[in-house]
Image 1 (cartoon, one colour):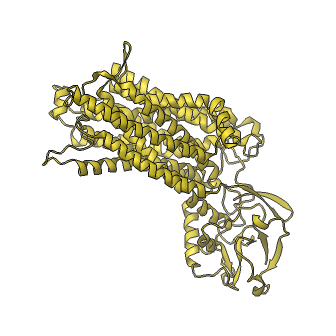
Image 2 (cartoon, helix red, strand yellow):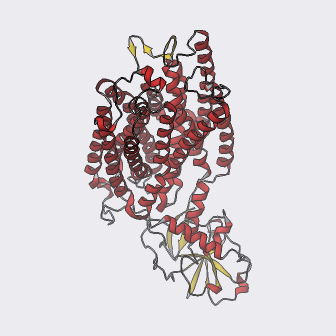
Image 3 (spheres, rainbow, N blue to C red):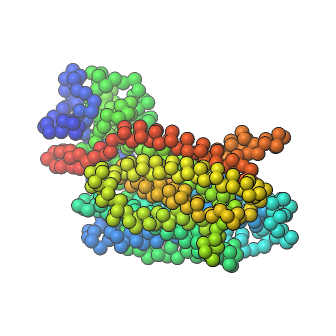
Length: 636
């Protein structure tokens, strides 16, 4: 059978040569990897002859190509998705800000263990997002993954509402005042009561994990990548997507907190369940408008095939006379369902051996022995992406610490705004408001100004925005340390050292707005830039896995925050020596300022690592590869 040998993009202008399998192997010795690869349609495997349609072609819910794209997708479909994300984020943030207080005041758990339990819930719900991304990319597609996991989410929220409503599911609240809580004299929750709460809480987290990597990718799927305005629409989509996230957070930090204070815990958690139910209905109503992408089969299997094939050929030499070329299917066909072809790159040369076709292979075309260039490049891309979201973990650590530490700070401060007294649990609304303000003015102020500095048509590249966010987060946590030092000294000077739950009238809580607003700006630049970066750079058939990278980084940040808290408590606290921990429950005797400065130092180190990784990263580009007279767009 004939083998078509194709030059890679570096020398694409030359005419491709055709080489026969029977050709003298000595004639191939001078060929260099990265300059040539072979095409073949002799794939005797489940891939058969490959998939003849381009992987980026949108289909309807039945998997059939959409004949008239003007009747589907676009901004109208995206707004149905925005509504679903807003309700999901409302529930997520509503639980994150209220569950610590619920465990402390209702379940009678110590504040530290309550905060750690919620941090673990947040971490698991984000870190396990890779499962949702895997199911969406491999089997279910993004639509059905969202549909299934939003239902699971609703079941979990309903269970939490029952826990807050039925007295049998909570310990006895009689004779349990604030002093009893502080002294630990309230009746503790029974083991089975905590087991029930943790079960429904983690069911909710499991539902969130399935949704998170799919919603942003599914929304971005609604735009035609062949359109002239595709990049502009994608940029605006991710900004508006995060605006919907922010609006959900603002509602959670204000309306849900108000409902809890006025009507109780049952109504507060019930409001989250009702909002989630309404969002599910809205999502399903938009079904006829959605564009879908075909799932590409198990990405883990394809990754495993590349690793196994590369390992089996680890001793093969690229300069060997037995070397024929790198294997790829002919024409527009791709071995990966739901994906276009990906051109060869020179990164991770060791993985290229998985696609290295040797004469000794003969007719053995099993993907566990011989992979296509596209399969190999998918694995390379996944590896190349890892450093960037990894550098966002530190931002997640700071955000997680702010959820608990800043609330503890606010309990000691005056939260009055004129005659209005703002509840302490509403304080996290201010980062959301700063995000809302920035996104509202983003295209009016930031893009024109930054375009003059960078020359970038969209103001800043995705990695520039991520880096800017990380830099702002350093300023935020550094200021937090400065203010905390002042707050602590003020408390000791004014005689509040032992009254860590009593607000000090002379010191306003609105000094916290500086660190809150700065971290809000950092979040919008970093997270929006990261989501857009991962969606555009991920392989066609692994978009949800790519988006899951950001969620996994967020989850790891929650876990690291918990681990860091435990390490600091063990290193700085000693009950026998009556040595107070930096993170003492009594914030006035602890040293939160030292802890904030430790986070500042770690953030600076993380930022330097990011700069190194960002400078080395090469964005994917679209190359045009000509095969048998046809022109095919190939990502590289």
